[in-house]
Structure formats: structure tokens, C-alpha cells
Length: 230
Ligand code: ADE
Image 1 (cartoon, rainbow, N blue to C red):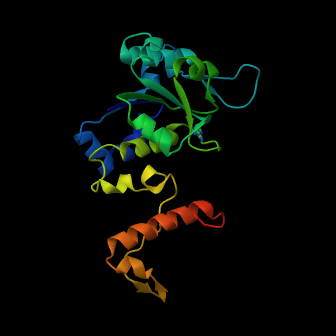
Image 2 (cartoon, rainbow, N blue to C red; image 1 turned 30 degrees about the horizontal axis):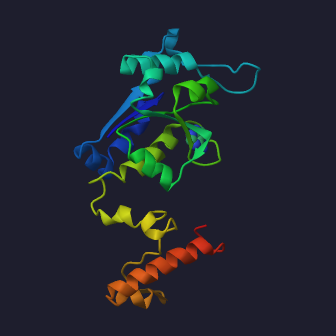
Image 3 (spheres, rainbow, N blue to C red; image 1 turned 180 degrees about the vertical axis):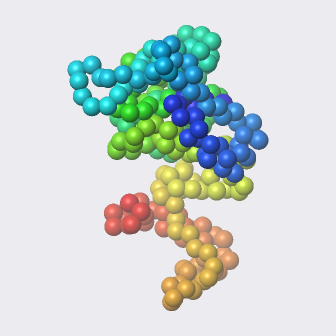
């Protein structure tokens, strides 16, 4: 798989790129690249954004800048890219990210992620240059970099070899193995701490009973509005 992240701050991804599971995925064949809008801008002085038409606070990422960055990096009209890769704009008003969307994107051969900055994108970027608009939640971050990292992380951990233990992805929260529900609770040593005990069944070594207990806990969490994870 190939993921290109377009950003104003490629260095913001240094920490992410160094994480063990990301390096594992790269060693396993993932190509992860960061492309600077500023390096491709046709405007003087490295300009990439502008004041919004109609007035208002903040700055908006320009459509000509994103068009030039895509064209400069891929060497063709960005509209022609849509046949070969999904171009995902990270924006608070986009489709809400969930496990099904992550799974869908993780199945692509190639992805381009567009991070916005300041007040966001000129809408024509989302409308014409992107194929998808994705939001990581109904709140506004100061830029799309963190959102792009969240999306990349969720995708990368689904790639073979990223996590040491393959089962960790199969039976995690919101996966089909748990009927789309949240994950069951985990416990580790000590088996008792300040009188707080671990459910007996987990210490029983009885795999079938443990499997049933976990599925039951996942179902209960999904149905129980008072659960702290909801
Ligand atoms: N950019 C700023 N806020 C965002 C959000 N909530 N999701 C995706 N991209 C964003």
C-alpha cells in the first residue's frame, strides 16, 4: 500500500513515522510519504492560504496551491488521479471515521491524504480535487495533521505485520469479530490489587468460556448507555 500525506508541516509526522508499528508496516511494504504544499506553491513567498471571500476570521488553504501540489508530485492533472487512488480531505464536516471506513480505506492500493490548516480548505478542494472528505469527530482541530495521523494510524494497524500479534486487529473494538461492538475489558497482573479482583473466568484457562464471556461483555457495553466507554 502507498499513502501520501500532503501537509504544511511534514515535520509534524516525525514522531508518528518513528513508531514501531509504523516502521513495521513500512518494512512490510507500506510506502508512506509526506509532501509539503509549500514546496509546490506557485505563489510568491511560499504563500499557501488566503483570507476568506465574504470576510471572516482566519485563513483558507487555496485551491490553486493544492492543485499545484498534486500536479507537481504526481506529474499529471489531479482529476486524472481519481481513477487510481482515493484522495481524502481531512475536514471536520466530512464523513465520520469509523472502523468500516478504516477497513475500506485500508483495502485501497494507494491513498492521498490532504491536511487542511487554519480555517480549512477552499471548498473547491473538497468538491473537485478530493474523492472523499473524512472527519475524525465533530470538533475543530487547528489543522488536519493530527486528523491525518489518526486516520493513518487506524489504517496502518490493519496492515499485515504492523502489530506484533495478528489477533490484536481481528478481535478489537468495532471489528466484525465483536459484531461491531466495543472491545471487552482487559486485565493483567496483579490478579488482586487493593481488593480489586479480576473476573474469575479469565483466570480459569477455559478458552471457550473466556471467549463467551468476552463476547457477552462486548454486547453489554454496546447496549449499556451507562458504560463509561460510551
Ligand atoms: N481538521 C480540523 N478538524 C478536523 C476534524 N475534526 N476531522 C478531520 N479534519 C479536521
